[in-house]
Length: 274
Ligand SMILES: C[S@@+](CC[C@H](N)C(=O)[O-])C[C@H]1O[C@@H](n2cnc3c(N)ncnc32)[C@H](O)[C@@H]1O
Image (tube, rainbow, N blue to C red):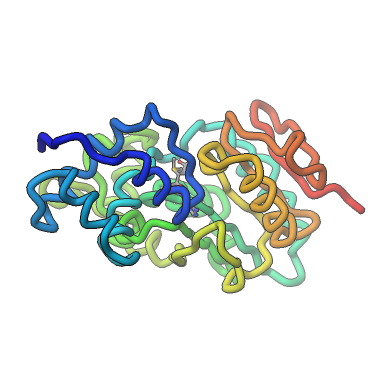
């Protein structure tokens, strides 16, 4: 959709207010790319007309749609490979040993986008730790974006999406083809609990967890927001738990309550003992 010039500063202010995601002035292309569809669906002739309406009206569903359309949802199955190797070879064997008595384990994927990350964890457990399915095992998948979570719940992925990170063997074992798309099996779907959660709000509904995947989310925030989120992360992670961040993310110089440890080719973060 071609559009007269529009107030991108207003849009990035809205995105930051609602999600804490900081969009530089160079990110206008995100609006050009994604807001045309939002404008069209809502009956506006251009992005500019949509933005003027957003500016005139109190915060509502249309504002949320615009914000969600501008968030980056890039993800893939077994993204970056090595964190999942660390999970398989070190983290889960260690925690399974530690939790033998309580037989309970909670894994949280925060900012999980369309679900490839939590479903990768579920596949890894089915493949390598099937005994855990008889435990009180919870894989919590959360995101601020209702749009992303509804795709996760549908569990329906394009050919391109399943090609990214899944071997044909795993694909055929855990997905079935429906016309041009791949539908996730009920076994995997039932292993994942979906929760809409904005990381900048309180995390009251969230239990204390054993493993947190918070990957490729902090990079979008300013330092103050990162600090506040890492403080809450520390409070929600068991003292012998593990935190995975994205490859370009660190707790260094942001929060000294974590120590970084190397597990083979992956870096993982653990609460420092007091
Ligand atoms: C690039 S994706 C990362 C997906 C996955 N963790 C991975 O590494 O493949 C970033 C996700 O963070 C979510 N996000 C952005 N701001 C958020 C916030 N304030 N609270 C929760 N999720 C947020 C976005 O909706 C998006 O789905």
